[in-house]
Length: 111
Image: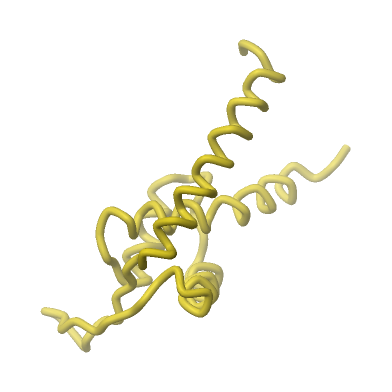
């Protein structure tokens, strides 16, 4: 029998990009806050060691940009916000996810 935790890990990795872009489409956020929000959704919980490299890649691809903002309780924080190309990418992968999820749900049938 295949290792369920490995399958779940691979699925989660594939959905983190969609999830992060969706969060940032609503509001700019800093890395720790993104990790905390995703952590509140157990299937998407990922450590900062996963989140920050993904944020850097999305920024390098032009889907995110960063800015610094003063923090009330400490040093300034680097915030991420989605760009226009990031919104287009989010729309495309969101449509792909909905089509895939609908297809899989159709194959699985009622629980």
